[in-house]
Length: 272
Image (cartoon, rainbow, N blue to C red; front, top):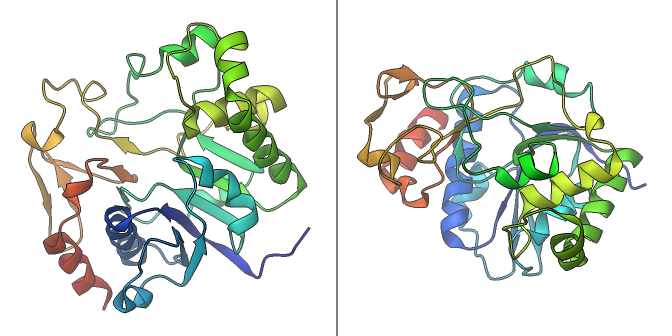
């Protein structure tokens, strides 16, 4: 097992320039709120990282272009950290989550299994998660997860890679009412957790890791674009507000063009 040289940090994947912009905004938000804020971005060879982004990215890793979601199975191998928060690029950190490290390390891998609406209430996500209900799968959201670099987590990612490679077998012969023709990371990681023992990958007694998910039905909106349903603001004292509710957990805006140059510049003013 190759040792890691850094203790703790964040890792995200950015395959394509728009995802890279999101990753840059994410890194700025991490450094705005968190004292533990070392940040690694993984890009493919087609994604060009401008020089100015190196002010915020502590490590940039370049890999071959892979099919969608397949690169995340490389997390154990690629991360430079002994302990990693792996987070999707189209998120914002909205307050310090440094205290999350202490609880998450109770497991070698700890997934988000419940997401929140913008009011910070646990959401009813069944409309998106019927596959999980039908198959009694752990409700894995890989959008925010904790990984300790150890043999057990290595075995998890090897298992996930196997599931990706043999996904047609799981889809056609094992899963009930599978609606996912092609594998995505949440499905694959949920299957891997099932194979290795679901109890090993979440902590039922705490409310985190978690994140606010701005998808339509989680928030009971009539429009798929959350910006058409509510207002948002970033105050001068770094409080991110949606419809009057201060956001305190990672914020998954998921609509990529929310990441504007104007918003990036506002966070740059807070970091530099």
